[in-house]
Length: 143
Image 1 (tube, rainbow, N blue to C red):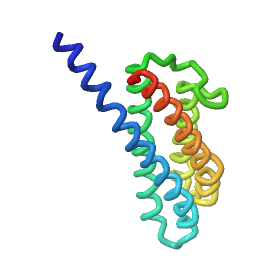
Image 2: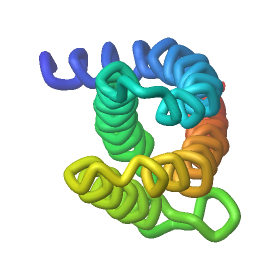
Image 3: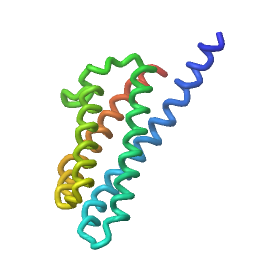
Image 4: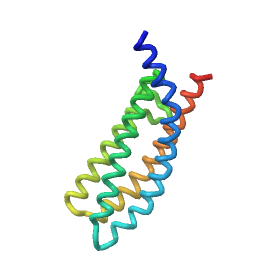
């Protein structure tokens, strides 16, 4: 009985957390658009710190999306947005994170700017759409 109560509490809180994450991803995308310009500055320490925070935030997004798909019984391989599944989204994020680490390690800030503009920002946009699909599934379950 206690387990069922805990699952219901988690499910009830999920709607609020999904909404908060939607707002966060929107602001994150805007911040990344400004961030890519900051790598053209002489001092790269602050943009690198900001990029690390972006990656940490996207890591939290992955944990939330994984938990939500489990709570909502969504198959990780099911295409939720434009033939993209949760599993493929996670794979793509992992690839982007690896590229970011490598570019940072090699101090290739031109490549880093390209990764932000052409890989990271689009995947954040896709993440927002994916989250919208998950929110829709959540709303279907509470009605």
